[in-house]
Structure formats: structure tokens, C-alpha cells
Length: 328
Image (cartoon, rainbow, N blue to C red; front, side):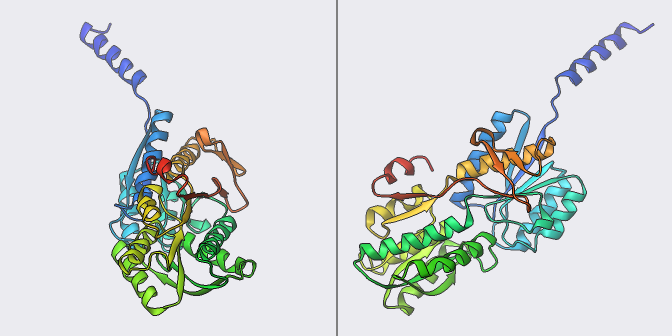
């Protein structure tokens, strides 16, 4: 017969086990910390975690935009024993070995925004269709030239790092559609490494190296802000326009100053939200090879490589910047 003390202990243990909920730990890994785009993505990820109830999102990333720094972060997450990693990669190939190690230990891997080679992840979430993003950037440049009353003008691209997966894909798509936009004369591609100071210096360098430059297109949310500041500081407002992909909250000043007429982006809050749901879907075994859940955003259709697109990019200008700059 059990003693009164042992009965009390048994009941307490049963109550504890019944109330305990297995927590799914998902690491949201940014290219680098302190970047407004990824901070916004984390807002969405935390929203998804709250909806799911049993998910904890660990937002992390390196302080520099290098593969080596990201690999160090990933090794730390493997040691912590997280259930899933959702990463925007600084290099599509360099992170593959460490992510393979993660998957061998049962950790699910999703790449989002900037992809990982297929061998290093299970699902990749593109923020939009790559071809459409590329053409949107070129069309924005053509629209900027039109606003300057230029039939054909010099255009430069200010990218992130030379190894950035998404940037390189978008630039390749931009080059494919150039014949459709004869007014756009692409003169060079520069790299600011997703660092504000270096992007600013590169933008100033472009303005000085190409005196006939009319448009700087930056598919980087860091680069576009830096380029707009460079145009303002160099007294080029009304002579050179900046466009590309940026956050409304960070580009509102450029629209108001006239450094930019328009730019585009998807909602990074939604991107972090969707990536978290995809990771949770993999952990719980409810994702299939054909589709996976993005929560309130619906389901993403996956191709043979396990890649899918979230949504089309949206164009921001003076008509809507005030509304959206208050959101993200």
C-alpha cells in the first residue's frame, strides 16, 4: 500500500506531465543582426509562434554578413538542440555542410529570402517569383528614366554580397529582360555587402565613376537606403533616382526628398511569419512534397526542388508611402 506522501507525489507528477506542453524551438536566422528587414521578419515570426501556441522562436544571426559568421551561429543552434532552423543565407553553398549536420540530427531546415542549395535544406521560401522580382526592378528603373524625361540612360545595380543567393538570381533575371526595356543601359554591378557604410561608399563611387548615371537600382534593403542618402548628399536629387527593393519605413524620407520616385518590396513581416509556419509544419510532419502551410497566408505550392513563392512584390510611391511606413 502506498503511503500518503507517495500518493501526493504521484498525483503531483501526473498533474505536471499532463500540463506540460512539448515546445517546438524554431531558430530564425538572419543574414545579420541590426537589419530592419530581418527585424520586421522576426515580428512576423513571433506572431506565428503566438498563434501556434507551442512554438518558441529564437531570433539570431551574425553581426557580419559572412558565411563563416553564420556557420558559427548555426553550430551553436545545433548544440542547443533546436527543432528547426529557418535561415536567410549569406552563401548558398558554404552553409550546406553545417546544415546537413543539423538535418542528420533530426533538425528540420527551411531557407527563406536568400536560399540554401537543395542539399542543405528541405524547403525554400522565395519572397516572390524570382523572374517577376527581376523584371519589377528593371521596370522601376525604366519608370525612373521616364520621370527624368530620358529616352535611354545609364543604370547601375548596387547589390549586397557577391555570394548572396537571392541578389544574384534577381540580377540574372534583370539582365534577361533588358531587351524589353531599351531605355535601360546597365553599366555595372557594385557590391555593398549589405553594410550601410560600404553601400554608401559604393553609391558615391558610382556617382563619380559614371557622370551620366541616371538610376541606381538596389535589390538590397540596406543598399537602397544608402544609395538614396548618397544621391542627396552629392546634390543629385532630380538628376539621379534610386529604386529597387526597400522597406517603407526606411524609404519614406527618400520618397519625400525626391531621391526616389518608387520602389518595391513584399511584406517582410509576412515572410518571417510564413517561414515559421513552414518550419513548424516540417517538425510536426504535416508538410508534403507538394505543399506546406503558411498559416493565415494559405499554402505554398512546392516545386520539385522544394521551392515555393510567397507573393508578388508591391510598388510604393508618394501615393501610399505614409500608410505603409507606419507598418514596416
